[in-house]
Amino acid sequence: MRRRLVNSSSVRSVGWKDDTLEVEYVNGSVYQYFEVPQFTFAGLLAAESIGQFVNTRIKPYYEFREL
Image (cartoon, rainbow, N blue to C red; front, side, top):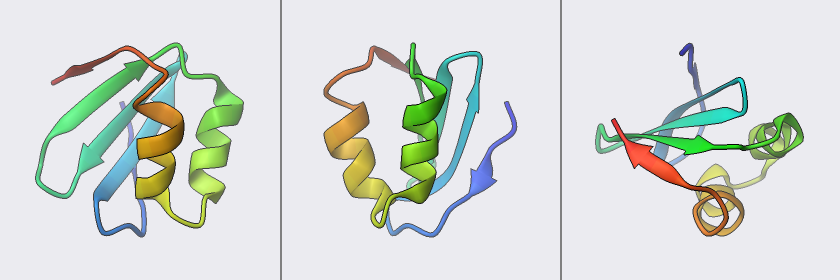
């Protein structure tokens, strides 16, 4: 999946395809979050704090796996 770099102290890059959100953290770990709607990904990209958005709007609500 193609990811784009983001301006965040905790997240290096994010990508979205077919309702799967991929998040690369600055520590090098990569997680995929499943069944994430495109509008949620758009909200993530527009968020003032990407790390806070992931922590409050993604992690509590979507199943995930570490790659």
